[in-house]
Image (cartoon, rainbow, N blue to C red; front, side, top):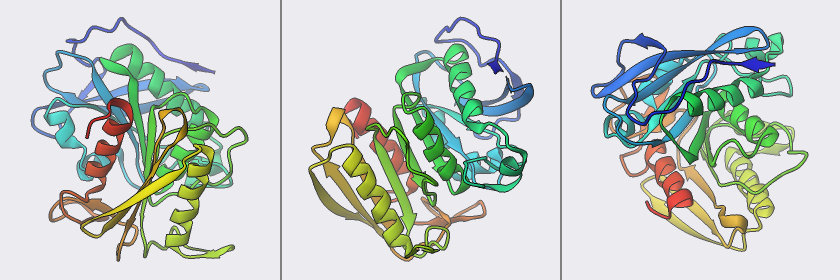
Length: 292
């Protein structure tokens, strides 16, 4: 059972909620709350300081034992809000973790919180209270957040227009898989993507995820290009206007790929063109507007 207080959407309105210190110049930072199964949950909203039109929204799920504030600061998506291109949503996991299923992960799994319901409610609350463009709501997940993102779109594939993950894999097959745009990324030295049972490398894990998605989306061809240390394979001929893209970073481990010298922990410089935020945003725009 979920609930929240909705209000009419007005494109130029201020974000209502508990104001927070701004995380970046030219933006506002607000903490909004929803109630899920009687539990108060929160999410950060980073929006352009001046909003005069509806914008795409990016919801990003943080890694385990990482705050939403840190994920916002290091993700590389902040310039989009500063430039008035997107509204950013950062849900806050239960004790900085997500219950992605199959026993994963941390205290959220131990407590059995319903994070699928939470993310659905954040999506609904943001639509009701923020000037978000319908059909241009995107989900991003890192590590534990990536696993949670796969779980969310498997349970409710119609909530988001596209999905992008880094350093996370689906923990179970969807019972009723549906075509959906996906960008799946990871480093070929990522220990979190490698496994002993079945024995496979990080590269094999990423390849398998992309192959499964290409099959479910009915993709018939592909092309490969290289951007810096990133090898990008883009599927073509996919059904229902979907797309599948896999990004394998050579020599990279579990750290989030950023543009320029990292100022936040758990991130590494891969150059502006290969940064995760750059590739993900370009992918989102391509699958929903045909533009990069």
